[in-house]
Amino acid sequence: MHLHRSSPARAAVVLAVLALVAVYQFLPSLHLFVPFQIAGKNIWTVMPAVIMIALFLLILPAIWRTPLTPVQAGGFVTLAFIWLIVLLSRIAIFGDTVDILRERYLLLFFVFSAVLRYVAVDPRSRTQLANVLIGALCIQAVLGIIHTHFLPFVQVAPDSTGDLGVTVELDQGSGETGTLLVRSGFADVVVCGQFVLLTERRIPFTLRAVIMAVMLYAVSLSGARYAQVWSALLTAGLFVNRRMDRAAPVVLAAIAVVAIAMSVTGRTPFELQSELRFDQDSGGRGEKLGLVIEVLSNYWPLSAFIGVPGSAALNAVSATGDVISDDSFGEMAMDFGLTGLLLFLTCLLVWLVRWPISILSALMLIFLFGNFAITNSILWDPWLFYFLVAWWLVYTGTRKFRPGTPTTQPAVEATH
Image (cartoon, rainbow, N blue to C red; front, side):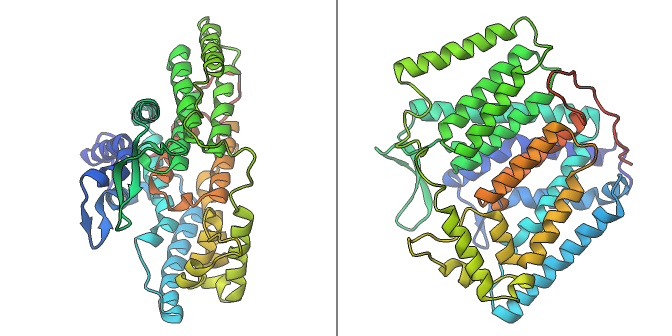
């Protein structure tokens, strides 16, 4: 099937993607109010992945006609083959009951990437995609700020059965989670919007600065240190621009005044956090990494090819009580072996990186790998989705981004 830019099928794909960008961030919370499960799975968290897979299959011929190199196509096919072989081997050798939906992440990253790239390379749909993304994530940031300052006692906590539910708590928590229910996920998704803001110079600078400041403040409320650093750097990067209009100094002064007011009054972004964690270690990540290495070594050399039994990873506990978590690379190695991990990373680089790579794209790649290293974000479908939306918007917005130079729209790659 040949999808022309004006075809109804292409229009349906663009509309579906825009709708997901607008609502995906709210779906994790929707289950708390409208619980709906099929085969024991939360339909609200699974449905977006199913929709994106359907879109991927619909536009597969068009994707194949884009500049998809033999290495990219071969890498994805090989990864899909390894994914299937490893899951079957785990069933046969370890006797594991494999959860196909949980293990989807190894391939879902590339399904998301292919569909979002298809939408982003067209200038018309790219502009729509950027507008919806910035608007949606600005709303997410505002909701987080409102929750922190006006409704901090409304918390999401497990009930007696272990299921999450909305409760009224005196303990106001240690960081804002937004509608994504995880503070790192909330902060990282908002940071994706900040990356895109740097490329959207068609938006008046004053408006971009205000949105950037709102996002910075929302991220600071999360208490997620990694995202806070990136948010501050990106906000500063907005002002490293020789083409600032006359309103820029005024906006910068306003932000400085607000910061001074917060420090004087004590109404800082951290006011509701029990501790800043600056004096803590990395949350036991060193010991968690040691656990991953220990579990992999216990099943070596089998773990190099098919990972380890699910029970081995779940039952691993350090002397201080830490369990395996906060490590996407370790997660992939235990699920699919070192071979699967290396093949995934190779495919990721081949699919995303095109030379010459812009500075902003390089920074996004560092942001992604850093996130993988310190969180289980490879399992967070909403985060992967929004990161890849932002990635292709930045990629198509500029291939030669330099602070202080105007962005020119690159030639659109052929889509058919």
